[in-house]
Length: 65
Image (cartoon, rainbow, N blue to C red):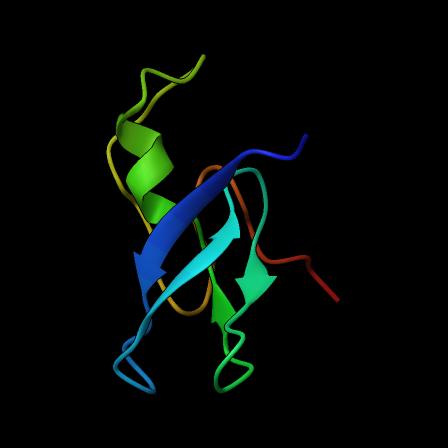
C-alpha cells in the first residue's frame, strides 16, 4: 500500500491527499505538489528545506536539461 499525506495546494487553495514519496499532481488543478510535510518525519539524510523554484529541493531536485 502506497503511503499518502495531505498537502495544501497554493494554486487552487485546496488540501489534497497525495503520495508521501514523490511529487504528485494536485487532483484539483494539476499543479505538482511535493510531499513537504513528510520531511519532518525524520527521513534518512534529513536537511532543512532548501526549496527554490529553479532547483527544487534536496529530496526532489529538478532535472537539469
